[in-house]
Every structure is written in C-alpha cells, then in structure tokens.
Length: 195
Image 1: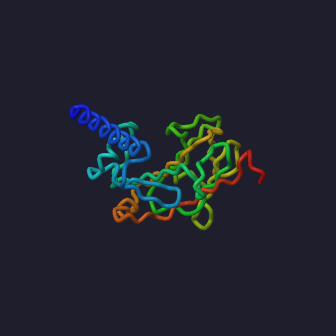
Image 2: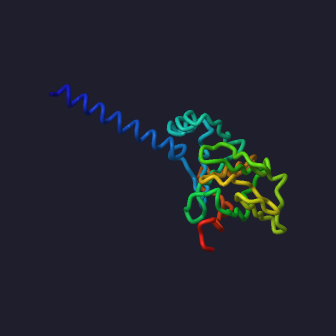
Image 3: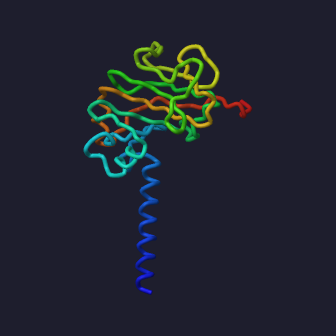
C-alpha cells in the first residue's frame, strides 16, 4: 500500500509540475513580464538573467530574442479594451512610440507566422512609415486596402503585433519594471457589428 501511495504522489506531483510549466511557457516567457496597455514585453528573455520558464518557452518556440542591449520586443494580442485582435476587423494603432533609433512593426497570425497577402506587406519600419506632423503615427490594420499606413491582416481570425525597438533606453529602464507609454490599439469596426 505504501508503494502505491508513493507512486501515486510521484505521478500527481510530476503531472502538476509539468502542467504548470507547460501553461507558463505557452502564455509567455515567465514571470519577468512588463505591460503597457495591451503591449507585453519580457526584457530579460534574451539575457543571461532569463528565468528557466523564459528559456523553456524560447526553446519550445524556436525563437531568438533580442539581447537587452540591442533592443526590446513588445507583443500585443489584444486591443485596449482587452478584446483579442481579430484580422477580420478594422483596427487602428495610434499615438507615440517610445524613443528608439529604429523600430519595426510586424503583423502575424496567432502562431507567429507572417500573413501572405497580395500587397506583399507584413510590417512597417520607422524609415518607411508616414508620420503625423505632431510626431505621432496612425496605422490601419484590416482585410481591406486603405490609403496611408495600412497593414493587411488577411482576414485571419486571430492576429498579433510585434513592435521591436532597437537601440532604445526602454530596455534599461525596464529593469525597474517601468513600462513606457505605448501606442493605443482600438478595434474600430468588425463585419458582424452594427456600427
């Protein structure tokens, strides 16, 4: 009977431990996350100080994160209201970006794959985007072409945005858990909504 209880305890402990590890690695890169609105970043994910969960998540995904000295990547899967980003809807990214020498914005499907589209555009860089006069920017995301800064979403039901800031002081400030102000993400219209 003792052997059975020991074995049962071992199995339950292993199942709970592996289950919690799986949940942690699927939902991000561990506990070192900073958040600014819908944007999330893990500043230490690409450093020697990365926790075991971040290392496991990166190994599982096969990703190579930015080193903190190089920059920082922010990911958004939801809008400002907490609604999942839906590529069938019209979404507006607007506002100021944190200080950086260079940045890229990429739209991918929920698995992180680039979205094939007739326009051949999967993102913008700071060198090619059209800025507003006040130094802010507006980028439209959606399945239908628009004038100005537009990123096609391929009408995917779930999309995610990755904003990579290169040569930025944000990563160093993030060591103190201070998240910078990030641009807003607003879902403006969905085909099934009445507005």
